[in-house]
Length: 301
Image 1 (tube, rainbow, N blue to C red):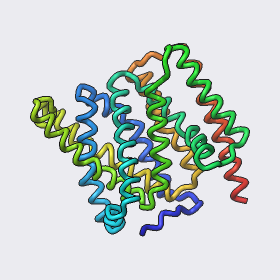
Image 2: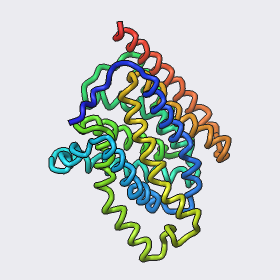
Image 3: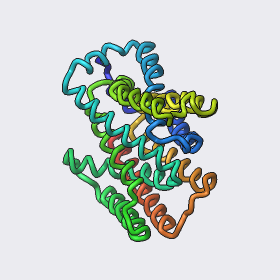
């Protein structure tokens, strides 16, 4: 089995991997806007199918295929893989729909809230003790959600859906006793039959954009594997070569880019509720990050 225990130190190589991943995720809304006329289900199906050869090539090149075969023969690991595959497919579905439907700001909000939700999960599921700063950060995030709910008259379902699915996915992913690359390949392998079934159905009913639509659509759908697998694998390898505190700060790069893209490129409305809620989230993240860095310094002494 692969030894996935990370060293508690930063490396330039790890920083390069992680930065590349977050920048690619930050630019992803532009790609998703380009396929907004294609149904989210078809986009997700192609994300799965064309991730397979990329993930397989990485495993073969790194000599990590044995761990995958072990996972496929171990019922507990296979069940965990089924759970993470289901969560990541729902997360992708919400994200793809949100960008195409003009809710990129809500997507950014969801990924801003996610680290605070992870702290909350640690307290609820693992009995981890929360510091006063962490409690304050979570309370501010909850108030921000309340502000948006009051203004819109409903819960910000896109933001909460992305937060919940990604947070639980990340939690279960840590429990999966194989490397990140093997875990990703296991997930897309589990999703492959469903993806192929949908693609065949779409072709049969004439709703497919793959080779049936424009050349541009076909190229974009073929590119779904690259935009899905490459940043995930870059992140997985970067996270192993960086301190948790470094990754904790870098994770704000992508939602910040999504936020800027939504406001300045897509022209999404930034109403009064968001003008109140987003600064509350940013303040919560400052409190959380400051507390995390303080704890890292104390732990490093």
